[in-house]
Image: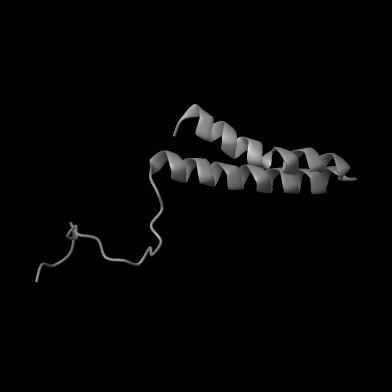
Length: 70
C-alpha cells in the first residue's frame, strides 16, 4: 500500500471523525471514534497484506500440511 492509498482511506473517514464534535457525552464520542478507527485499521491491514478473496470457502491449490494423507 502506498502513502497516497493510505491517505485516501483516511480522508474517507475524516468527515465521520469531524461529525463526532456533535456528540454530547464522552461515552458516545469514544464509542463512535473507536468504531471508525477499528474499521479503518481493518481496511488498512487487508490492503497492506493482500486482497481478500470474494469466497473465503473456496479451496486453494495448496495441500494441507497436517493430518492424514489419502
